[in-house]
Length: 259
Image 1 (cartoon, rainbow, N blue to C red):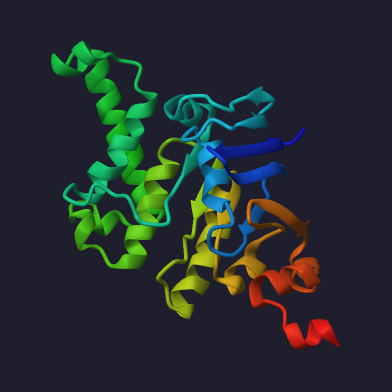
Image 2 (cartoon, helix red, strand yellow):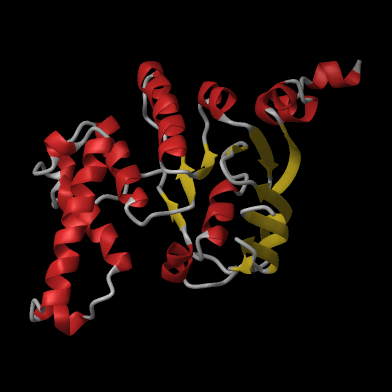
């Protein structure tokens, strides 16, 4: 059974159809790319998966359960986490505090127990701290635990955002342009990092990315969106040689069309 199954999913805003009859399947352990020109509808797909938008039509199933239109916090509890194209950290908080916040998703103690620092909350707080420090160590951020998030270099801020997502213990991780703003060396390092966390944390990953070197190196399969419609899907070699995809990215020479 697919971990994520999107069937005939559409998203309309008034008279504008941002995504039309979109189908996608993700299987456990895969790294799958979602690519297309700017404005193709890629982030809209992410927003429907994570509950930001309720699909106008179609079904979204995760682990066999319908999640289309479910509240974002409930979808996160189901096991889906995401990062954003524009990094969204709590920049005035420390690296450790950013990860601790994500851990609160799994707290069993209630608000009053937290306010009064009752025993159950204190136990959970200690466990969260230990878990967060271990996560930072595994992702190479432990030495920065007390640094403000805003003080980190760009590449480490990206890594911290991923660490915060991993703190929610996801089964599916959505990465929205993780290599944005990176130079070729940083993008290559990110490719290795994504494969490592996929294996270590037993993840399935869906990513939006414009760096084609990253996409073609890391992805098992790729879906291509243009103006909200899927025009191709397949393995990287198939996508690279697909004429529709080439035309969508490079355009068509009108003189060549008329010959």
